[in-house]
Image (tube, rainbow, N blue to C red; front, side, top):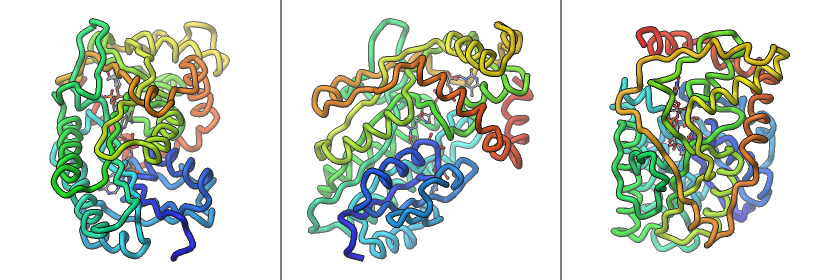
Length: 354
Ligand code: NAD
Ligand code: DAU
């Protein structure tokens, strides 16, 4: 057991961002053991990690972060000295349908992990609990050029963002009350390979491929700040190693897009890559009923991370979105498998009455 320099528990490692974090850590740090702990909900998919599953420093444990006994057992069995906590219910639309599941996983699950870390790490040096959070905890911005900074007051609007805000508060409470060595980051919208097609970008790429309607909420005027997922994973690596205890770091791409403009960019690129004539899929755009409580605009000021730790995004958006669309079109079997099973019921429930 003493053969690894560090033993890092990554929760939610079979999900979208988690799989990129696991891949980065397993390949970059062969002297760390990476324990991927994931319940494999609808969003978790071990296929996302096929390329690293046989690495000697990678372990997968299936389980629920709310299971206190299992969580404590993992901390002792693997001598966990670092946590990168990504496991969560992550889709806003689902949180509107079923807020309780979000409170359970995102709040109670985070609390179970904090409790296990506190109990196991008492008196130990060089441990770290890294909580991965979202810019949605800050609420919504007007179209006025302002940004969320680390000091922006929390003002969540959806059950998802309320549950993430609550988990952030618990992480800070464990730092302030018990001295747990914690760090938090709040990131903007991620895009890239392996994202479950309930989120805007993979859902729309798949629908363009299948010639299905593209359901644009409201007038398509909401604005999001998009960051390539591998740049988020690099920021997590940097903050995990060099961030200061008790601090918060915002992560974002200074890359704001109105939904409708982003959708047109996706249509142009997807049509080109599919060999369709220009403008072929524009007619699929369908304006539907808006999301309840739909946040107008997110924009992250990530200057602290840049100035203190030297991070900056590596990819320009035009390059990242083209790479992403190409990946989904080249990996149609992945898409077909994740949209098999219960996906059709989900789609029906979310979009039938819009
Ligand atoms: P995701 O939904 O793709 O993956 C979540 C993972 O957590 C899945 O593998 C799932 O099986 C696992 N999980 C869910 N409930 C669990 C439980 N009770 N026990 C153990 N595992 C469980 O999510 P994502 O988009 O990769 O987001 C990861 C984290 O990053 C989340 O905490 C999210 O709030 C945060 N975040 C996401 C974004 C984004 O744009 N996707 C941006 C900022 C922050
Ligand atoms: O900002 C970070 C957050 O980004 C993360 O914390 C969340 O986990 C992640 O899901 C994401 O939240 P959003 O709600 O911004 O992402 P989503 O992909 O669901 O939607 C992006 C925008 O597109 C939003 O304005 C709603 C709109 N939309 C979405 C879907 C799924 C549509 O117009 N039609 C759709 O079908």
